[in-house]
Length: 96
Image (cartoon, rainbow, N blue to C red; front, side):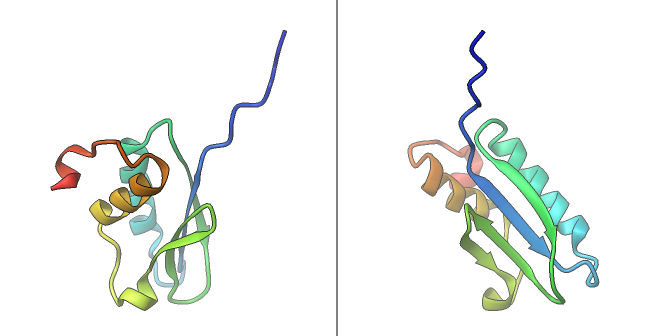
């Protein structure tokens, strides 16, 4: 029986500030991403330092709350992830 490991999926990491109580926001975004890309990505929630809310894809920064001075919108994260992992994929209403 061949038990070759499954190919590794891209990893989206959401690093959030637990002191700021941003776990709920991070979990909600993770849910949105997993609903859109159920078999295409893995998502990791990771507590970070004070004030942080960063989203990376395989280590590359997709969004930084500090740089943008706001939280990410699900639509922009979905589009950024799609553009990197499957540019031809339709996101339906998130493409509008």
